[in-house]
Image (tube, rainbow over all chains, first blue to last red; front, side, top):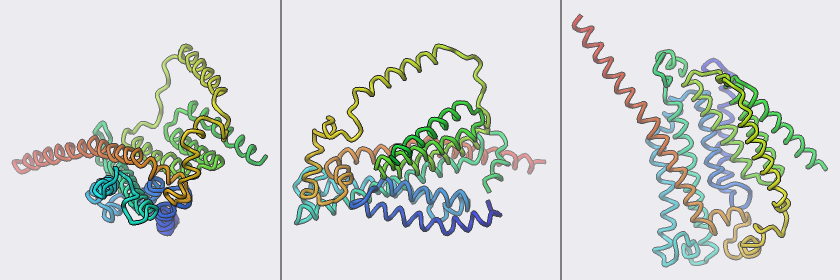
Length: 153
Length: 196
């Protein structure tokens, strides 16, 4: 889509808005609808949109596959780690009351951490799946791989 | 009144899209119709005050899965669905009987938003009454998902992570092997041309 000026221009201005909305959904999840899962999905949709207009290579320069693998695991680790920390503080698994002096403040901190973990894992896994699909530059039957590559560029 | 009108309009659109998906043989059109179907479902979820579900449906159903299906179509290079070789009456009958049984089953389901339905009288009153004191988060859905049912949500995140790992194992691994084959064959070719 190199020659599609209008689409490129709109994508350029729309991407920050999508990303901002994703972060709004992430951090406003305590007060409004949404949370980590929704925010992660919206953020990854923004990146997929960017990749569709500007190409997979440009997107992978900004967010390489290796980084996504680390982030996907990091999100699960943050979630599980919050649970383990609450065990170490003397409570049950994922018992946020003990994360802070005040139980309600502990709950807030726990939910923030847990939702951050969900958001990181969901957004990176969705983008990872998209990379895995879009990165296959040849048809399954193995024919015509040359023109398949040209279509991508 | 206006809510009912929107509901009926969206449901009609849903039904029309569903029939169009069944009838159409062009896969590209079918994928786009799937996307439209998801968008209509998202609209229905908004009408039912489930904005977070609508976010997910619009982003995953209308966005990501459409893109993934389009990529798959481009990779497999099939644009037309195969014509069915015969019209069997038996599956149609089975589907009709199952559908009728399901529709009959809905008469036992409590009405939408019924305060006396079993789902509302078990733990829901406690969440509604005490979550503000215990968790202090105004959005009760978040309080339930992240705190009261945090263990379940942990399981869901693990499922998503596992799904990502599975897709990577299936797709990236195969691609690398092809790349190796290609490298090997091109090296083989180069060797031949050197000899020549």
